[in-house]
Length: 416
Image (cartoon, rainbow, N blue to C red; front, top):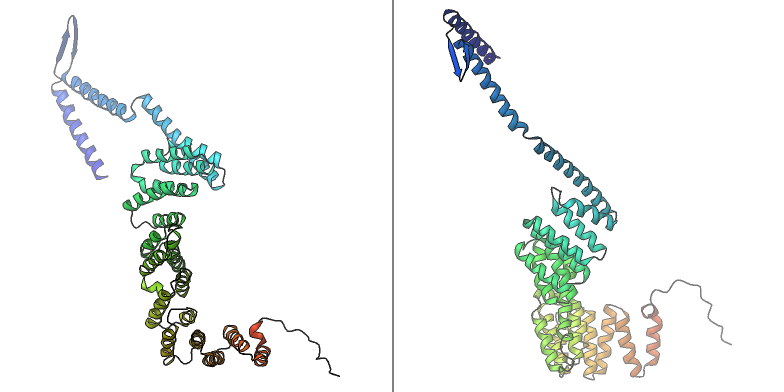
């Protein structure tokens, strides 16, 4: 407000001063060109010149502000095309979510060139083409996404890997994921896809190496990681034998199996299922001594009833030494039903029939169950003690056939 007042004041003073000068001496200007002349006062010429300059300045600004009509029309056309592209993109994404693949691919592809985010259009259109089984078209759309947005290589590569995995193109998918892993080593989506393709390829060794990274980035829930860890170690041990040629000798198979077992992390060795499977494979290949040594070392490191039970099932070359080893464990673990059961079985291998009966009875007294009852009754039957076997089975019928419902029974028949 103050600036406007000051401007008006200056203009008023300047106008008064110029008016006074015009009255005192209007001046005289003569302009001649060929035969034409123009006579005017000096002040009129100055005023016309000033007005002409202002008018020219306004026209120049007006021209550059609004430019030519063709530019205005082009801008209007571009804005309209962009609005149309946005509408088609929205409809295409809706069709994609509804599973209308042909419509989604058509709308998204058409709108891609005019879209502000062509990457979104091309990726979604590639997914729609894949769902229709149009492999070449899907690959073309992914390539278009790369060309329009080179900085989105990771995003495009992830979608491509998902499509390749879905098609069963495992080798190309693996190569693509390994490349992406170099670009984004901590990307959880890439690591999960890499895990999936390695499982499909049966490369459990690679899965085992990938597990620490999956844990580090929390790519999977803890229970799923634990299950995957168990499965990977188990399948890696099994495949160490299965992958060998049919003509491979058992000694070489045992060697390969032992190497795979040695590469297993110590924490995984506590898994009873894993130890049982490794032992079973050794026994199938005739590696009883190797199995006995492995179990003995594991039990020495950490007591485990299931491993002790398994130890009694192994027939090593020196059963007497095996029995002595089990007896040494009884000093610290006298209340282990599994250890008593193992001692009974090892006593049988050494033909100590009376001791075997004693151990089986102790195992049954500590923890009555079908396994130690079966061993005890089988031994007694071979020793000719049928009456005692009948008594044991009759008094422990629920162990032999557990889970029977409560039902009415007839009274015992009267003897004549």
